[in-house]
Image 1 (cartoon, rainbow, N blue to C red):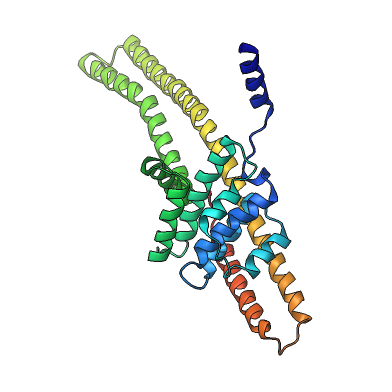
Image 2: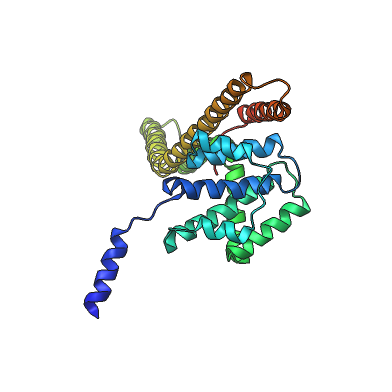
Length: 302
């Protein structure tokens, strides 16, 4: 029995847990179909929703032929959502299913709120997915908190950086000047109460001042070094995250450029009287509007 258990443990360790962008292409497509379904559930997909869809597709690295297919059929998704979820989880282990379901809930929130309005159809669909994915209210609350933090991360970083500099200077100056200032004040009082004409006392007083200044410099440098050591670790991590967000933003912009050019090239070979021509032209306009929105946006976490 012990040997069997050990073999099971070793087998579990050997089996790698994949994150979403390393999962099979079929899983990615099904995942994106669900997101497109959320975007189109209350009518036509708008540029703000397309913008977020492209950011999410860039995050999991969806290939162009799959993106074009998703765009072509984005208003035709009528599958039963129970079947979609079943197909989504096919071939995944327990841990990968957990990664997928929590990621999907968060991304559904992103699409649902992309245009700053939650329609009744969107909320109803979201609640269905929440139930099917067995996401508890407590888990949803944590996902909501993460979503809010992601939204505010870039703005917060700019303000926090300015604030940190001011606070750091105030702390270091306060810590370094506080003791010497009190020290100088006491010595000044002592000097006023005795005969300053005494040469020895003048030298002693000068010595105290130099000592106080030296204490200030040493204290300032020590406290600043200590604070820098702590803050630098956080800043390095935040800098890395911002760099990653920028790469993601650039990839999403690149995806949109490529897809617009691809569809425009396809349109050139179509008959102008073809009934689908107008639909494709409208899709190009939609993508161009989304591209403009994305280029104006600051990079953000997802």
